[in-house]
Length: 401
Ligand SMILES: *Cc1c(COP(=O)(O)O)cnc(C)c1O
Image (tube, rainbow, N blue to C red; front, side, top):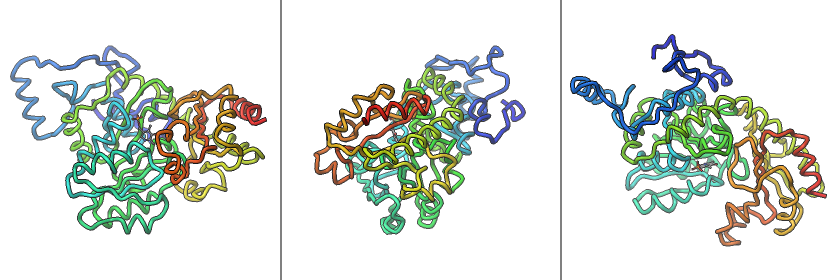
């Protein structure tokens, strides 16, 4: 694949369609073929010898010998996502959690330390605070948005990683990416962000100096509620090191899922514009409604991080969180009356999904622990899809009556 054969554009909508794909694909196919193989052959032992010697000093490369190390369909999607985020390279994993756990297991060792911001994805929190602790890695959780606490939590020569998320779940708090990156550089710690809620259409963290960007590609990147995948994007040397460990830890996305992900990403720019517009309209409607107690959406002037979101994002995303002026059962009844959104976990697909965190994502927590985290009984998370905005608003209106 020579440079001339690649699509050269820095525009997200063009990159989402063409990425870094070769203009000329096998059999003249317009789409990237699904290479359904577990292993790869060599013409003779001389070719194998040449391959092994090249691989030895390249650490990665254009071709692979076995499916756990790479796959042409997977690599085409990785190149596309790297282009979208403005990174040198990307690595796909079979889920977002597989990406998080593989990266953290690669970067950390006993005695090292993580600084993690709160209001983060629950399983990321549990992996750091619970699982990694068994292996001698300590984690300090600091309040999102408290830069002084973040800096104070850094332990010289021990803090290897500052891990944050933006926007967060469920309160859609925004990390000041430039400040987080600067703190990491000043203290010799790597910075990593879970940018799932933002997508590369709305935010490009590498441009603010963040070292590693992670997505649950299950969400907006795939966009159709039909597959699981995770991805990590960064500088070439970091991606090379992570690739070696991906082969060891064993989590690589399946070529079929990679193909569906590629297909989903082709419409990413269009879909995210619609998610942004729909969520803004829904958030404004809910904020003005007397039966809604409170709304969190970074596109609203009332959101604590609105100014920061405006400064570093090109859109505010598709998730709206709100409190109904009702008790636990009244909130459930409101959700039951809705006709368009499905009651389901997850977000980022074309279909609107809605959930009551106290009943779903945070159900297993003790009620007092849940409340300490600010998860009230009447809290609702609405992952707004790409349906007609007025239909969604009319549906909310009838359910709130
Ligand atoms: C869903 C999600 C994850 C986990 O991704 P999976 O693909 O479900 O493993 C991580 N972070 C965020 C912000 C998510 O929404």
